[in-house]
Length: 63
Image 1 (cartoon, rainbow, N blue to C red):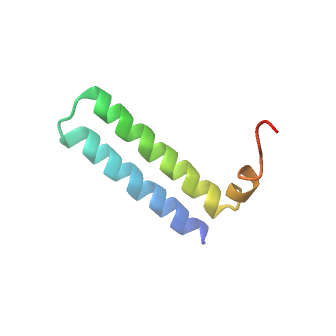
Image 2 (image 1 turned 30 degrees about the vertical axis):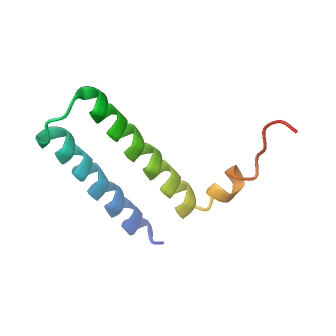
Image 3 (image 1 turned 90 degrees about the vertical axis):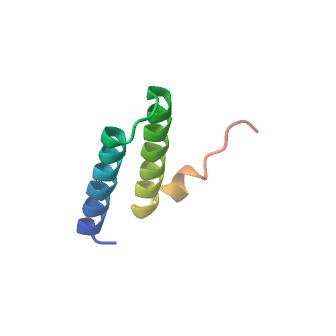
């Protein structure tokens, strides 16, 4: 995936999240949960795009 596509996608997600936070009235707890979910999804997507997700899934905790 080209880097410009990744940057544009991040910009679009950021603007959409800002619009939701700014113009849709919600409780602060719900906004916090929404922001956390979006950040987690974006980080996982970035790990997959750059091929680091497969390395993280190989780690095992315990026996």
